Length: 290
Image (tube, rainbow, N blue to C red; front, side):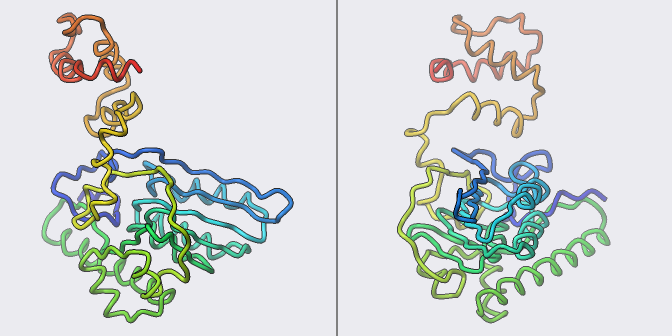
């Protein structure tokens, strides 16, 4: 039996075990800074949670180095691996500092669990929260499928209890919200107890590909910024690595072909598939050169 790492992302028919849940992002970052002389620290969690973004291990290592009485955790994240999210939540709760969470863009999926660790949770007026059921991929016989479904039931129950404990919203309401992949505006999050207060609208300039979700608001779609945000070399390299699964050597060869002055890649590239892909990318040569 083979299982994909369990994530909180909504089921998607094109999901593959060898790719991240969120194939593309703009401006993703994870930064921690100390407030000199003020006994506090600031954390910007603006990335996917888990192996392809901020892992629980990396977060814990940075968090344990913070010797402060107050932590301001800003979140703009589409979520990620459920166990990493739970671990980050538990580490924040266990830390001696008072934790203030500010959702500046999006706290979806596993990131919404992390947000629940705040002693005070504030959300920007133009921000969103989203909760839903855990999902994953399993290959096996009917016994494996039933076992995996049972595991997901237990995970969902634990997540629901976490939301209930922090928000005061009833368990049945939370379960229905999770079943429906519920997106909450800032006002709705405050009304239901997911946030304690509202803060002024923020522009974090960090965006994610949310196509794995069924009900993501159009306002959060990365695609609407496609013309304003030209594709960079890093975007293409990430696409080839995570989506296409090409090796480092093949990616370098593709970039050489795309940057070539010739309108078509040379046929001596040594690999028919590589030549075909380079031909498709050739039209983007001018933007890639910049």
